[in-house]
Image (cartoon, rainbow, N blue to C red):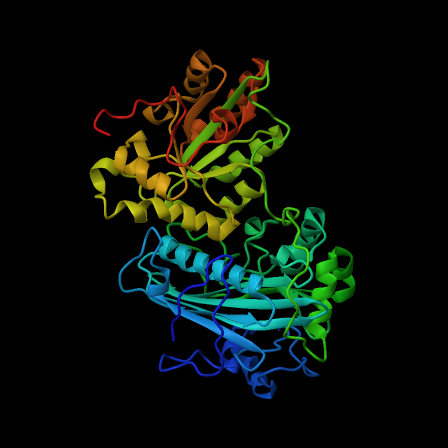
Length: 525
């Protein structure tokens, strides 16, 4: 059954057990199998009761508690298909969409936020996947009590690279009406950093895990909950932490990766919400209906794992402050990690413009750049002349791809887009703006792409640099990487501060092109 999609501020339609003639979701036992780390333990599901009720004794410690996994008298359901998501910029033909989420009595704000999240999952699957085939989003209630509701969304998707699952767990505070990301179970960014260290230790030596891909960012730690003993479970999507496979996305074959943090070790890391969520997950008598919230806070602290790009104390508009933006196109590449090492050592912020295949191949490097405060931007999906290679029907997919990939890996909405070769036009800029991004070109070309030596790259930049320069470079080129230490040193000697593009141009607006004195836009645009 499909109904009109819930929008922010709207009330979700109530649905009970009557699902109409449409296809039914898999039963609770089949969906809980997604928790399992191996087929051998799947038989345990036969002893797990469906419906409501607290966790039974002997539950698998690697499973979040499941209090409910299908609609009933106390919890309704919204379901939807491809036609319910018609306003996305890219809608590939023939993709099957079958999504759902629960609707709780008294928690309409929660339903609206779950609707937004499901919308984002559909949009990003359509944009980020190669030859997408099918997306299903299912749900489980993993906490209900102490004024808290917890919902785990299970995403099953198929595309050119096969079938995989992903997980996201969301927590509703009935007192404030706030829907929290999983990282908000933790007290702050410091607690997330400490948890990241614990997880590193637990997963050390696992051949299916690349430790270089594990960073304390919101989208990596986007599914956390509790087992029946109150231990904190941290689960990672299929392939999210897999080692790099050159020319191919990391393998999803290892499946769900899990870290179990004992309750006594997790307790010092939890926020007040986290403590109540643990109580809600282990409650013997779940409370599935809540009262509407009272006073809703006007603003809330930033969730742990959300990283702002650039030095927050740097104001490029302040008198006497001379800023320069170092930008790197075409990555992430094999040498990007070494560049990030240097930038971290020198405390330099940069802006990275990514292409689609490199972003799919090295998602861990993408996450690292974001985690370390660099600005992540789009350089289009394919590195082709956009005005010559794509017609108007193909532009939405090209512009959408990298944004969706970055959002899936970090949670960040991409705001900047640089067309390959600076080849742009009116339709290109219009599509960039329609998808919420500003076009960014450059006003200082290092010409590293012409085969210059490291010394020539440094000298050329220093000859032309001035306050407000946006410097074009490429982290795919060995001479550029070799030039980086000396270039940073000389710019610093000249009194320059290193900023992101957004800091240099000053709050770029979607649909506009920057910098003002950048590459000349072709007359035909």
